[in-house]
Length: 157
Image (cartoon, rainbow, N blue to C red):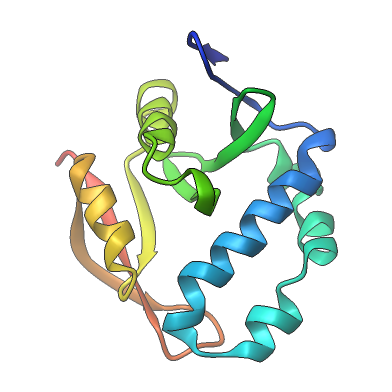
């Protein structure tokens, strides 16, 4: 499954994409989560490009990642686990350009995704997912190792 358009491509991630994937994950997580967790030891100590690249190069993770590429640049990614959107990140500099929308629509169309977990305090992400047919279910759980909660969102039903 590969989705193409005039100016972009959603394709399966490859090992050659790992450094760019890690770069996006590190930067976006720092930008979005530092204000929630307020933990610089994690934001700038634990979250580093090389360890993230090593983690995401494992086949069980990499084989479930799709990247959004335009003009030869990976601008976003989505990780799908069964019927769950496990992760969706768009490079900070390219946010607001419809990339997240393309990735979520791809996941719905190609994988019939049904649910995801999002940090309860990540209101921008919650609004984004609500705009794409997801709603908060009332299920919540602690984000491992933190005092913060994640809420489940689902679509349909």
